[in-house]
Image 1 (spheres, rainbow, N blue to C red):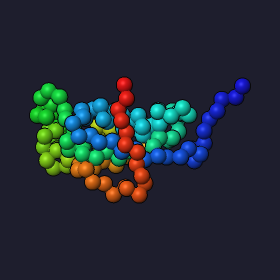
Image 2: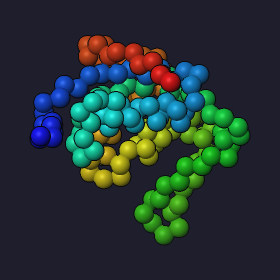
Image 3: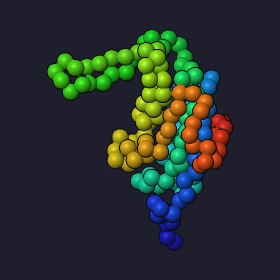
Image 4: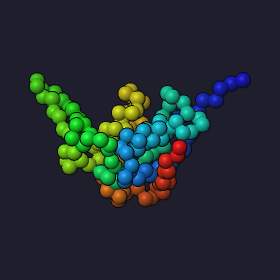
Length: 144
Protein backbone atom coordinates (compact mmCIF):
# COMPACT_ATOMS: atom_id res chain seq x y z
CA UNK A 1 0.00 0.00 0.00
CA UNK A 2 1.35 3.43 -0.95
CA UNK A 3 1.10 6.59 1.09
CA UNK A 4 -0.65 9.52 -0.56
CA UNK A 5 1.48 12.66 -0.65
CA UNK A 6 -0.17 15.72 -2.19
CA UNK A 7 1.63 17.99 -4.59
CA UNK A 8 1.93 21.57 -3.44
CA UNK A 9 0.07 22.98 -6.45
CA UNK A 10 -2.75 20.43 -6.37
CA UNK A 11 -4.51 21.77 -3.27
CA UNK A 12 -6.88 24.71 -3.71
CA UNK A 13 -6.42 27.52 -1.19
CA UNK A 14 -9.57 28.92 0.33
CA UNK A 15 -9.92 32.27 2.05
CA UNK A 16 -10.93 32.18 5.70
CA UNK A 17 -12.20 35.23 7.59
CA UNK A 18 -11.69 35.40 11.37
CA UNK A 19 -13.34 38.16 13.39
CA UNK A 20 -11.20 38.79 16.49
CA UNK A 21 -13.61 41.17 18.20
CA UNK A 22 -14.07 40.12 21.83
CA UNK A 23 -11.94 36.99 21.44
CA UNK A 24 -8.69 36.26 23.27
CA UNK A 25 -5.60 37.20 21.24
CA UNK A 26 -3.75 33.90 21.72
CA UNK A 27 -6.74 31.74 20.87
CA UNK A 28 -7.38 33.61 17.64
CA UNK A 29 -3.66 33.37 16.79
CA UNK A 30 -3.58 29.62 17.47
CA UNK A 31 -6.59 29.02 15.24
CA UNK A 32 -5.12 31.17 12.47
CA UNK A 33 -1.78 29.33 12.67
CA UNK A 34 -3.57 25.99 12.41
CA UNK A 35 -5.39 27.13 9.26
CA UNK A 36 -2.23 28.64 7.73
CA UNK A 37 -0.35 25.38 8.24
CA UNK A 38 -3.20 23.28 6.84
CA UNK A 39 -3.59 21.10 9.93
CA UNK A 40 -7.37 21.18 9.54
CA UNK A 41 -7.15 19.33 6.22
CA UNK A 42 -7.02 15.54 5.89
CA UNK A 43 -4.08 15.74 3.46
CA UNK A 44 -1.90 17.71 5.94
CA UNK A 45 1.80 17.17 5.31
CA UNK A 46 4.23 18.81 7.76
CA UNK A 47 6.81 19.78 5.13
CA UNK A 48 4.44 21.29 2.53
CA UNK A 49 2.61 24.61 2.44
CA UNK A 50 -0.97 23.37 1.98
CA UNK A 51 -2.82 25.82 4.23
CA UNK A 52 -5.45 28.39 3.41
CA UNK A 53 -5.30 32.19 3.27
CA UNK A 54 -6.38 33.84 6.52
CA UNK A 55 -7.94 37.28 7.00
CA UNK A 56 -8.17 38.58 10.56
CA UNK A 57 -10.39 41.62 11.05
CA UNK A 58 -10.97 43.72 14.18
CA UNK A 59 -7.51 42.80 15.47
CA UNK A 60 -7.42 45.88 17.69
CA UNK A 61 -10.56 44.66 19.48
CA UNK A 62 -9.04 41.34 20.55
CA UNK A 63 -8.81 41.02 24.32
CA UNK A 64 -6.01 39.79 26.53
CA UNK A 65 -6.46 38.44 30.02
CA UNK A 66 -5.04 39.67 33.29
CA UNK A 67 -2.65 42.61 33.42
CA UNK A 68 -0.85 41.70 30.19
CA UNK A 69 -1.75 45.04 28.61
CA UNK A 70 0.96 46.66 30.72
CA UNK A 71 3.22 43.70 31.54
CA UNK A 72 3.50 42.11 28.09
CA UNK A 73 6.52 43.48 26.24
CA UNK A 74 7.64 43.17 22.64
CA UNK A 75 11.36 43.42 21.94
CA UNK A 76 13.29 44.18 18.77
CA UNK A 77 16.88 45.15 18.02
CA UNK A 78 18.04 47.92 15.70
CA UNK A 79 21.29 46.18 14.84
CA UNK A 80 23.42 48.77 16.60
CA UNK A 81 25.23 48.29 19.90
CA UNK A 82 22.77 48.82 22.74
CA UNK A 83 19.93 49.06 20.25
CA UNK A 84 17.33 46.94 22.07
CA UNK A 85 13.85 48.45 21.83
CA UNK A 86 10.92 47.58 24.07
CA UNK A 87 7.22 48.37 23.72
CA UNK A 88 4.25 47.26 25.82
CA UNK A 89 1.11 45.69 24.37
CA UNK A 90 -0.96 48.79 25.13
CA UNK A 91 1.49 51.06 23.30
CA UNK A 92 1.69 48.58 20.42
CA UNK A 93 -2.10 48.81 19.98
CA UNK A 94 -1.86 52.59 19.81
CA UNK A 95 0.99 52.74 17.28
CA UNK A 96 0.41 49.57 15.21
CA UNK A 97 -2.98 48.00 16.01
CA UNK A 98 -2.57 44.90 13.82
CA UNK A 99 1.07 44.14 14.57
CA UNK A 100 0.46 42.38 17.89
CA UNK A 101 -1.85 39.87 16.19
CA UNK A 102 0.64 39.37 13.35
CA UNK A 103 3.47 38.69 15.80
CA UNK A 104 1.30 36.26 17.77
CA UNK A 105 0.40 34.24 14.66
CA UNK A 106 3.89 34.19 13.12
CA UNK A 107 5.32 33.12 16.46
CA UNK A 108 3.15 30.00 16.28
CA UNK A 109 4.35 29.04 12.81
CA UNK A 110 7.58 27.09 12.19
CA UNK A 111 10.68 29.30 12.32
CA UNK A 112 11.94 28.04 8.95
CA UNK A 113 11.57 28.91 5.26
CA UNK A 114 8.28 27.03 5.28
CA UNK A 115 6.93 29.12 8.17
CA UNK A 116 7.94 32.36 6.48
CA UNK A 117 6.21 31.21 3.31
CA UNK A 118 3.06 30.33 5.25
CA UNK A 119 3.11 33.72 7.00
CA UNK A 120 2.72 35.46 3.63
CA UNK A 121 -0.83 34.04 3.45
CA UNK A 122 -1.87 35.99 6.55
CA UNK A 123 -3.55 39.40 6.34
CA UNK A 124 -4.44 41.29 9.52
CA UNK A 125 -6.62 44.40 9.62
CA UNK A 126 -7.24 46.57 12.67
CA UNK A 127 -10.81 47.46 11.68
CA UNK A 128 -13.74 45.59 10.19
CA UNK A 129 -13.03 46.58 6.58
CA UNK A 130 -10.80 44.56 4.25
CA UNK A 131 -10.16 44.72 0.48
CA UNK A 132 -10.63 40.97 -0.17
CA UNK A 133 -14.36 40.70 -0.87
CA UNK A 134 -13.62 39.40 -4.38
CA UNK A 135 -12.01 36.27 -2.89
CA UNK A 136 -15.31 35.43 -1.12
CA UNK A 137 -13.82 34.54 2.27
CA UNK A 138 -15.68 32.04 4.41
CA UNK A 139 -16.34 33.11 7.99
CA UNK A 140 -14.56 30.84 10.46
CA UNK A 141 -16.37 29.63 13.54
CA UNK A 142 -14.38 28.45 16.51
CA UNK A 143 -15.10 24.79 17.21
CA UNK A 144 -14.61 22.82 20.38
